[in-house]
Length: 304
Image: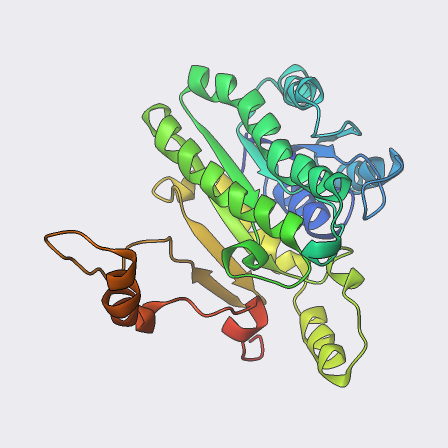
């Protein structure tokens, strides 16, 4: 019986643990050969350790799959290119890239340093660009390819004390849409997943109230395997008509997320003065203003 990723070759970044690990294992179980990338850094992006990636490779090969490890940083364009070339050298092609690598350096904006903003954007946004760009030439040449990027409701909706992470994750959504538009002529697809899952990154949430404690317990029910199934689907040929989309995954729920579009307008043939905007335009538009919400306000019910 054929598997949904038979013959495919996939690069998964940040695959030494959490969501990335489950995606790599699931991809291999569904027939793909996998490049398991993980620099082995701390949650804040410091240090390096090649063993997490190798342990996942060992799991895959022990189960009869094919995989190789890579411990380079997605923040370096040449390292990203080397990851893709390693896939082509070892397995003959590259069919999919899952941009999952990430770090966290949370803090309120008025306390955030340039270094912490820069480091997070470099891993998430630049990392997604670097690996996607490295794969693009191969995708064009073979006339096919799939990119799966991890965005977040922290960027799509909002969250406290995550200006760096939120900016990077919303940037990834825009990057994915641009890639989908630019690469569709070569049958290359680019989509995003906004995952809800218990992982090392989520485990850093500060728990200092009963409400937060209850929220964390709910998140623990949302395993990375739930995300992996969607990533495997998006990398497969069965997703050939899914392009430029954002899917949020929360336990057994899958949501398609909206993209910004005009929802209301006002017009005045002679144009507007600042006073008229204040007196007429804003009162007419205000009922459609987006509230200052965080992800938990929008996804307010228990995961099912």
